[in-house]
Amino acid sequence: MTNFESLNQSVVSGDEAQVIEQVKAFMDAGVSPLEIINQGLIGGMNIVGPRFKAGDMFVPEVLMAARAMAAGVNIVKPFIADNDLPSKGKILLGTVKGDLHDIGKNLVGMMLESSGFKVIDLGIDIPADRFVAAIKEHKPDILAMSALLTTTMQNMKDTVDLVKEAGVSVKCIVGGAPVSQEFADQIGAAGYAPDAASAVDLCNKLLSA
Ligand code: B1M
Image 1 (tube, rainbow, N blue to C red):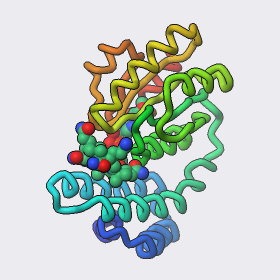
Image 2 (cartoon, rainbow, N blue to C red; image 1 turned 90 degrees about the horizontal axis):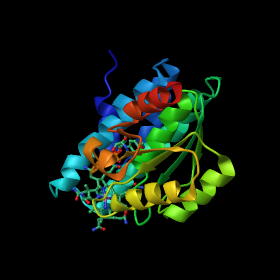
Image 3 (tube, protein in one colour; image 1 turned 120 degrees about the vertical axis):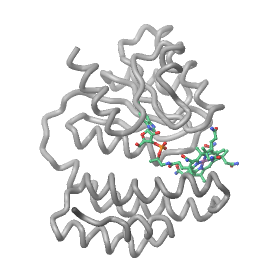
Image 4 (tube, rainbow, N blue to C red; image 1 turned 30 degrees about the vertical axis):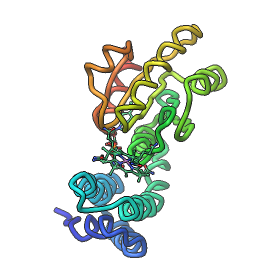
Protein backbone atom coordinates (compact mmCIF):
# COMPACT_ATOMS: atom_id res chain seq x y z
CA MET A 1 0.00 0.00 0.00
CA THR A 2 1.32 3.45 -0.92
CA ASN A 3 2.21 5.72 1.97
CA PHE A 4 0.87 9.22 1.37
CA GLU A 5 1.75 10.67 4.77
CA SER A 6 4.63 12.76 3.50
CA LEU A 7 2.51 14.21 0.64
CA ASN A 8 -0.29 14.94 3.15
CA GLN A 9 2.21 16.90 5.26
CA SER A 10 3.54 18.85 2.26
CA VAL A 11 -0.04 19.94 1.48
CA VAL A 12 -0.63 20.91 5.11
CA SER A 13 2.56 23.00 5.22
CA GLY A 14 1.69 24.59 1.86
CA ASP A 15 5.00 23.54 0.33
CA GLU A 16 4.09 23.79 -3.34
CA ALA A 17 7.52 22.74 -4.69
CA GLN A 18 7.58 19.64 -2.50
CA VAL A 19 4.00 18.71 -3.44
CA ILE A 20 4.91 18.93 -7.13
CA GLU A 21 8.04 16.84 -6.62
CA GLN A 22 6.20 14.16 -4.61
CA VAL A 23 3.23 13.98 -6.97
CA LYS A 24 5.61 13.55 -9.92
CA ALA A 25 7.44 10.78 -8.05
CA PHE A 26 4.14 8.97 -7.38
CA MET A 27 3.15 9.33 -11.04
CA ASP A 28 6.56 7.99 -12.15
CA ALA A 29 6.11 5.04 -9.79
CA GLY A 30 2.81 4.24 -11.50
CA VAL A 31 0.49 5.14 -8.61
CA SER A 32 -3.09 5.74 -9.78
CA PRO A 33 -3.88 9.45 -10.33
CA LEU A 34 -7.16 9.07 -8.42
CA GLU A 35 -5.35 7.54 -5.47
CA ILE A 36 -2.87 10.44 -5.48
CA ILE A 37 -5.76 12.91 -5.42
CA ASN A 38 -7.96 11.13 -2.89
CA GLN A 39 -5.39 9.94 -0.41
CA GLY A 40 -2.44 12.26 -1.03
CA LEU A 41 -3.96 15.65 -1.87
CA ILE A 42 -7.50 15.52 -0.39
CA GLY A 43 -5.96 13.62 2.52
CA GLY A 44 -3.81 16.70 3.20
CA MET A 45 -6.75 19.12 3.00
CA ASN A 46 -8.69 16.85 5.36
CA ILE A 47 -6.05 17.61 7.98
CA VAL A 48 -6.16 21.36 7.21
CA GLY A 49 -9.96 21.66 7.77
CA PRO A 50 -10.09 20.62 11.44
CA ARG A 51 -6.89 22.53 12.24
CA PHE A 52 -8.33 25.73 10.76
CA LYS A 53 -11.53 25.14 12.71
CA ALA A 54 -9.59 24.63 15.93
CA GLY A 55 -7.63 27.84 15.37
CA ASP A 56 -4.36 25.96 14.87
CA MET A 57 -4.06 27.25 11.30
CA PHE A 58 -4.87 30.67 9.92
CA VAL A 59 -6.25 31.89 6.60
CA PRO A 60 -2.89 32.58 4.86
CA GLU A 61 -1.67 29.09 5.79
CA VAL A 62 -4.90 27.55 4.58
CA LEU A 63 -4.57 29.44 1.30
CA MET A 64 -1.00 28.19 0.89
CA ALA A 65 -2.20 24.63 1.53
CA ALA A 66 -4.99 25.08 -1.02
CA ARG A 67 -2.52 26.47 -3.56
CA ALA A 68 -0.09 23.60 -2.97
CA MET A 69 -2.91 21.11 -3.37
CA ALA A 70 -4.05 22.78 -6.62
CA ALA A 71 -0.48 22.55 -7.97
CA GLY A 72 -0.54 18.81 -7.31
CA VAL A 73 -3.98 18.43 -8.85
CA ASN A 74 -2.80 20.27 -11.99
CA ILE A 75 -0.10 17.65 -12.56
CA VAL A 76 -2.47 14.73 -12.13
CA LYS A 77 -5.54 16.15 -13.86
CA PRO A 78 -4.50 15.57 -17.52
CA PHE A 79 -3.93 11.91 -16.78
CA ILE A 80 -7.45 11.57 -15.47
CA ALA A 81 -9.29 13.65 -18.06
CA ASP A 82 -7.45 11.91 -20.91
CA ASN A 83 -8.98 8.58 -20.05
CA ASP A 84 -10.80 8.66 -23.37
CA LEU A 85 -14.11 7.79 -21.78
CA PRO A 86 -17.29 8.40 -23.77
CA SER A 87 -19.36 11.34 -22.49
CA LYS A 88 -22.09 10.12 -20.17
CA GLY A 89 -23.84 13.47 -20.03
CA LYS A 90 -23.28 17.18 -19.50
CA ILE A 91 -22.93 18.71 -16.03
CA LEU A 92 -23.06 22.42 -15.32
CA LEU A 93 -21.12 23.17 -12.15
CA GLY A 94 -20.64 26.22 -9.95
CA THR A 95 -20.32 27.64 -6.45
CA VAL A 96 -23.37 29.71 -5.55
CA LYS A 97 -23.61 33.48 -5.14
CA GLY A 98 -21.61 35.00 -2.28
CA ASP A 99 -19.41 31.93 -1.88
CA LEU A 100 -15.76 31.90 -2.95
CA HIS A 101 -14.86 28.34 -1.90
CA ASP A 102 -13.87 26.25 -4.89
CA ILE A 103 -11.55 23.48 -3.77
CA GLY A 104 -14.34 20.94 -3.23
CA LYS A 105 -16.21 22.07 -6.34
CA ASN A 106 -13.06 21.65 -8.43
CA LEU A 107 -12.61 18.14 -7.06
CA VAL A 108 -16.20 17.29 -7.89
CA GLY A 109 -15.62 18.61 -11.43
CA MET A 110 -12.45 16.58 -11.85
CA MET A 111 -14.04 13.41 -10.55
CA LEU A 112 -17.01 13.87 -12.87
CA GLU A 113 -14.72 14.50 -15.84
CA SER A 114 -12.63 11.49 -14.98
CA SER A 115 -15.79 9.37 -14.91
CA GLY A 116 -16.74 10.40 -18.43
CA PHE A 117 -19.03 13.38 -17.93
CA LYS A 118 -18.57 16.65 -19.81
CA VAL A 119 -18.24 19.37 -17.20
CA ILE A 120 -18.86 23.07 -17.73
CA ASP A 121 -17.52 24.89 -14.67
CA LEU A 122 -18.89 28.42 -14.24
CA GLY A 123 -16.60 29.10 -11.28
CA ILE A 124 -17.46 30.81 -7.99
CA ASP A 125 -20.00 33.40 -6.77
CA ILE A 126 -22.61 32.48 -9.40
CA PRO A 127 -26.05 34.10 -9.00
CA ALA A 128 -29.22 32.21 -9.91
CA ASP A 129 -29.81 34.14 -13.13
CA ARG A 130 -26.34 33.27 -14.43
CA PHE A 131 -26.97 29.59 -13.75
CA VAL A 132 -30.24 29.79 -15.66
CA ALA A 133 -28.65 31.67 -18.60
CA ALA A 134 -25.92 29.00 -18.77
CA ILE A 135 -28.53 26.22 -18.69
CA LYS A 136 -30.24 27.82 -21.69
CA GLU A 137 -26.91 28.14 -23.50
CA HIS A 138 -25.32 24.75 -22.74
CA LYS A 139 -28.39 22.54 -22.15
CA PRO A 140 -26.79 20.37 -19.43
CA ASP A 141 -28.45 17.24 -18.04
CA ILE A 142 -27.54 18.20 -14.47
CA LEU A 143 -26.83 21.42 -12.59
CA ALA A 144 -24.45 20.71 -9.68
CA MET A 145 -24.15 23.49 -7.10
CA SER A 146 -21.62 23.85 -4.31
CA ALA A 147 -21.85 25.92 -1.11
CA LEU A 148 -19.52 25.93 1.89
CA LEU A 149 -21.23 28.57 4.01
CA THR A 150 -24.48 28.24 5.93
CA THR A 151 -25.33 31.73 4.67
CA THR A 152 -24.80 30.97 0.97
CA MET A 153 -26.50 27.57 0.90
CA GLN A 154 -29.77 29.52 0.91
CA ASN A 155 -28.83 30.73 -2.59
CA MET A 156 -29.22 27.14 -3.79
CA LYS A 157 -32.93 27.46 -3.10
CA ASP A 158 -33.11 30.69 -5.12
CA THR A 159 -31.46 28.90 -8.03
CA VAL A 160 -33.72 25.83 -7.83
CA ASP A 161 -36.74 28.16 -7.71
CA LEU A 162 -35.56 30.23 -10.68
CA VAL A 163 -34.79 27.08 -12.69
CA LYS A 164 -38.37 25.91 -12.12
CA GLU A 165 -39.77 29.36 -12.92
CA ALA A 166 -37.75 29.51 -16.17
CA GLY A 167 -39.17 26.13 -17.18
CA VAL A 168 -35.76 24.80 -18.25
CA SER A 169 -35.21 21.06 -18.12
CA VAL A 170 -32.34 20.13 -15.81
CA LYS A 171 -31.85 18.10 -12.64
CA CYS A 172 -30.47 20.25 -9.80
CA ILE A 173 -28.13 18.60 -7.31
CA VAL A 174 -26.34 20.12 -4.33
CA GLY A 175 -23.31 19.53 -2.14
CA GLY A 176 -20.79 21.15 0.19
CA ALA A 177 -19.97 20.87 3.88
CA PRO A 178 -23.11 22.51 5.39
CA VAL A 179 -25.52 20.88 2.92
CA SER A 180 -27.50 17.72 3.72
CA GLN A 181 -30.01 15.38 2.14
CA GLU A 182 -32.67 16.97 4.32
CA PHE A 183 -31.81 20.43 2.98
CA ALA A 184 -31.83 19.13 -0.61
CA ASP A 185 -35.32 17.71 -0.03
CA GLN A 186 -36.50 20.96 1.54
CA ILE A 187 -35.46 23.09 -1.46
CA GLY A 188 -36.74 20.60 -4.03
CA ALA A 189 -33.35 19.55 -5.43
CA ALA A 190 -33.10 16.23 -7.28
CA GLY A 191 -30.24 15.03 -5.10
CA TYR A 192 -27.43 15.60 -2.63
CA ALA A 193 -23.88 14.24 -2.57
CA PRO A 194 -21.65 14.44 0.53
CA ASP A 195 -18.39 14.12 -1.42
CA ALA A 196 -16.91 14.07 -4.91
CA ALA A 197 -17.12 10.31 -5.36
CA SER A 198 -20.78 10.30 -4.28
CA ALA A 199 -21.45 13.14 -6.75
CA VAL A 200 -20.30 10.82 -9.53
CA ASP A 201 -22.57 8.02 -8.24
CA LEU A 202 -25.50 10.42 -8.00
CA CYS A 203 -25.04 11.72 -11.56
CA ASN A 204 -24.75 8.13 -12.83
CA LYS A 205 -27.96 7.24 -11.00
CA LEU A 206 -29.91 10.28 -12.13
CA LEU A 207 -28.93 9.89 -15.77
CA SER A 208 -29.58 6.16 -15.94
CA ALA A 209 -33.05 6.52 -14.44
CO1 B1M B 1 -13.66 29.12 4.50
N1 B1M B 1 -15.00 28.49 5.75
N2 B1M B 1 -14.26 30.96 4.75
N3 B1M B 1 -12.14 29.61 3.39
N4 B1M B 1 -13.01 27.37 4.70
C1 B1M B 1 -15.10 27.07 5.95
C2 B1M B 1 -16.10 26.46 4.97
C3 B1M B 1 -15.57 26.98 7.47
C4 B1M B 1 -16.36 25.71 7.80
C5 B1M B 1 -14.34 27.14 8.40
C6 B1M B 1 -14.73 27.24 9.87
O1 B1M B 1 -15.03 28.28 10.35
N5 B1M B 1 -14.73 26.13 10.57
C7 B1M B 1 -16.41 28.27 7.59
C8 B1M B 1 -17.90 28.15 7.24
C9 B1M B 1 -18.81 28.19 8.45
C10 B1M B 1 -20.20 27.99 8.01
O2 B1M B 1 -20.79 28.82 7.38
N6 B1M B 1 -20.74 26.84 8.36
C11 B1M B 1 -15.66 29.19 6.64
C12 B1M B 1 -15.72 30.61 6.71
C13 B1M B 1 -16.52 31.20 7.85
C14 B1M B 1 -15.09 31.43 5.77
C15 B1M B 1 -15.06 32.97 5.72
C16 B1M B 1 -16.38 33.66 6.02
C17 B1M B 1 -13.93 33.40 6.68
C18 B1M B 1 -13.79 34.89 6.88
O3 B1M B 1 -13.42 35.59 5.97
N7 B1M B 1 -14.15 35.29 8.08
C19 B1M B 1 -14.59 33.26 4.28
C20 B1M B 1 -15.79 33.32 3.30
C21 B1M B 1 -15.39 33.74 1.89
C22 B1M B 1 -16.55 33.55 0.93
O4 B1M B 1 -16.75 32.47 0.43
N8 B1M B 1 -17.34 34.59 0.72
C23 B1M B 1 -13.80 32.00 4.01
C24 B1M B 1 -12.68 31.98 3.18
C25 B1M B 1 -11.89 30.87 2.96
C26 B1M B 1 -10.59 30.91 2.16
C27 B1M B 1 -10.62 31.88 0.98
C28 B1M B 1 -9.49 31.28 3.12
C29 B1M B 1 -10.43 29.38 1.75
C30 B1M B 1 -11.09 29.02 0.41
C31 B1M B 1 -10.07 28.81 -0.71
C32 B1M B 1 -10.74 28.23 -1.93
O5 B1M B 1 -11.70 27.50 -1.88
N9 B1M B 1 -10.15 28.55 -3.06
C33 B1M B 1 -11.24 28.72 2.85
C34 B1M B 1 -11.11 27.35 3.20
C35 B1M B 1 -10.03 26.57 2.48
C36 B1M B 1 -11.96 26.73 4.16
C37 B1M B 1 -11.84 25.32 4.79
C38 B1M B 1 -10.68 25.36 5.79
C39 B1M B 1 -11.60 24.19 3.87
C40 B1M B 1 -12.60 24.08 2.73
C41 B1M B 1 -12.07 23.06 1.75
O6 B1M B 1 -11.55 23.42 0.72
N10 B1M B 1 -12.16 21.77 2.15
C42 B1M B 1 -13.27 25.18 5.49
C43 B1M B 1 -13.23 24.35 6.76
C44 B1M B 1 -13.66 22.92 6.55
O7 B1M B 1 -14.16 22.51 5.52
N11 B1M B 1 -13.52 22.15 7.57
C45 B1M B 1 -13.77 26.56 5.51
C46 B1M B 1 -11.61 20.69 1.35
C47 B1M B 1 -12.63 20.28 0.28
C48 B1M B 1 -12.07 19.09 -0.45
O8 B1M B 1 -13.83 19.91 0.95
O9 B1M B 1 -15.14 21.92 0.11
O10 B1M B 1 -16.17 20.30 1.79
P1 B1M B 1 -15.29 20.54 0.64
O11 B1M B 1 -15.80 19.68 -0.60
C49 B1M B 1 -16.13 18.32 -0.51
C50 B1M B 1 -17.60 18.05 -0.14
O12 B1M B 1 -18.19 19.08 0.62
C51 B1M B 1 -18.26 17.81 -1.46
O13 B1M B 1 -17.25 17.19 -2.22
C52 B1M B 1 -15.98 17.79 -1.92
C53 B1M B 1 -14.87 16.78 -2.12
O14 B1M B 1 -15.13 15.55 -1.50
N12 B1M B 1 -18.79 18.91 -2.27
C54 B1M B 1 -19.76 18.68 -3.19
C55 B1M B 1 -18.43 20.20 -2.35
N13 B1M B 1 -19.16 20.83 -3.28
C56 B1M B 1 -19.99 19.92 -3.81
C57 B1M B 1 -20.93 20.04 -4.85
C58 B1M B 1 -21.65 18.89 -5.18
C59 B1M B 1 -21.43 17.68 -4.54
C60 B1M B 1 -20.48 17.55 -3.53
O15 B1M B 1 -22.56 19.05 -6.17
C61 B1M B 1 -23.57 18.14 -6.26
